[in-house]
Image 1 (cartoon, helix red, strand yellow):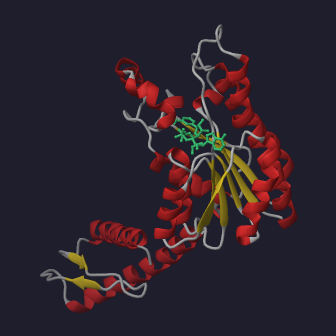
Image 2: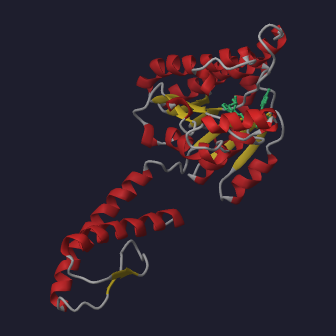
Length: 326
Ligand SMILES: NC(=O)c1ccc[n+]([C@@H]2O[C@H](COP(=O)([O-])OP(=O)(O)OC[C@H]3O[C@@H](n4cnc5c(N)ncnc54)[C@H](O)[C@@H]3O)[C@@H](O)[C@H]2O)c1
């Protein structure tokens, strides 16, 4: 049992007891000692208002209710379990890709890390979590090489259950001066590679009748942005391709969805963070009053990679501290 699930269980016990204490007001105080073998030893402290028989009568139904609730919690939590699954994550040398790879590993998945720069740090962190991982170094904007990447990835465990299309670049120059090369480079990696890789891995998932594809979109899948026309076009495209693939593959047991991060602290946003006035004005507009981190991506990616999201198709999930809600 993980520490997290123990904490959750103790919290649940306390909630049940709090509710019953309010209702009955019979027992003056109750303490929980520890969780053992899924059972909850309950210590009933002194109580002048009721005798021990009344206390036992009160405690038995509470104990039964806790046991029933915990069965439900265990079942619910298993839906997020990724044990035995293999994930391929792109852009894992740092930033959001590293955060998501670690989140998937923590939930039980083995991970294939594909990146332009080395992902050794990510691989060793995954191994420290007790999971298996390999690093494939590749320039994913070279579309001719994508098939070889997928072949190498499949050689790891013979399967890919989860694909996270995360690798992405941004080029910042005003639209009037934006070079065609910058525009094309961004589209190549951020959109075309997302489609081609999803297609190659999707074929394997169709054969197996199951799979999860999660692409990283952006607030600029909805908004126009400033000085980043190629990036905006690519991320609008990611939202579109997510829906297109979801429509075709939902009936084949494959869920295709996207995550749209808000302003997150990574290398990608370092130039904005360095501009104090810009940084402050953005922070002021974020309802959560802070920028996101790689860790903020972990819960959402595990959700979209797990059975907990089996009836979710073509959705773009904003992980933005409320930016889009404002
Ligand atoms: N940071 C943010 O605020 C933010 C917001 C919205 C969306 N995003 C998106 O999230 C994703 C990750 O961004 P990040 O902020 O972690 O960026 P980052 O620059 O920190 O990391 C990008 C990763 O992509 C890899 N990569 C770059 N070019 C590649 C190529 N040609 N082939 C293979 N790998 C390549 C890099 O090696 C790195 O691992 C991107 O798609 C980005 O557009 C980021």
